[in-house]
Length: 279
Ligand SMILES: C[S@@+](CC[C@H](N)C(=O)[O-])C[C@H]1O[C@@H](n2cnc3c(N)ncnc32)[C@H](O)[C@@H]1O
Image (tube, rainbow, N blue to C red; front, side, top):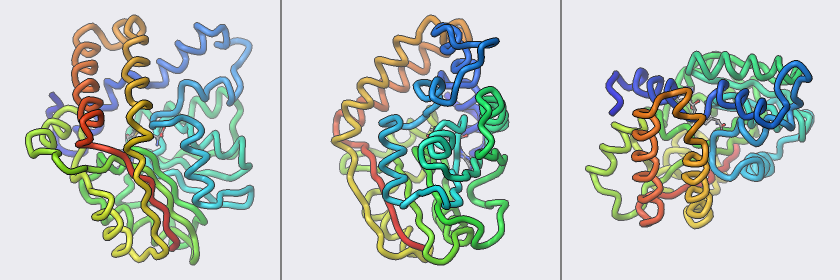
């Protein structure tokens, strides 16, 4: 069980997460794409995306937000920078990757350097207090991250503030569905640092209150079910590598908590939403 204060709890969760910079480098080495030859951005994509649905999910979000070569994009809670590098590579955009966790921000910076990515800037910071001026971006994106942030209205207000007039917001996140009980919510908080989970409709209200209009909310729950089943299988396939890096106990703990999470999705108590709106 995670122990610390709210910010510390998120940090602890990602300190001991199977997806990490070290994991990406180990996977590249296994594929024979490690140093000294030097991997390409494309070589990283199989390993550096920490959300559901891989590159197709980033692309779907980018399409909802109209991301193009001229877009100034902010990836809120960017992890190891995988989605940001994908947008830079495929859409030609300049992207700022905002990430709170020190190890992940450093990992994103080092992976950028490893593959010669120059259009993605990594900034360490908190999504509830974005360290950018008003109107600095055309697009704010985020994937599977607001679930960790108690004050979702603050993140949405901050995204609205940093967007230029008419800018676009697009994000995916967990959504609570009928039947998700208090004890299950508590466990998701204790084990995965997930908090104040919204429904599709309550998210729509929060987005509107933050000043956005033309809000679209898509239910991804059905789409996510097979994706999450495969993700659990993927973590299990990484057993040897995860035990080597994080130890047997952490592997077993993570397996238990992830199976619990995927079980909630299978039971229809937890799902996903994709939201897009104009600033
Ligand atoms: C599931 S990962 C998603 C990473 C990335 N969006 C991706 O799809 O690969 C969630 C990320 O949110 C970050 N995060 C959590 N709370 C944050 C906050 N308040 N501000 C910025 N980043 C945060 C975590 O450190 C973690 O890297």
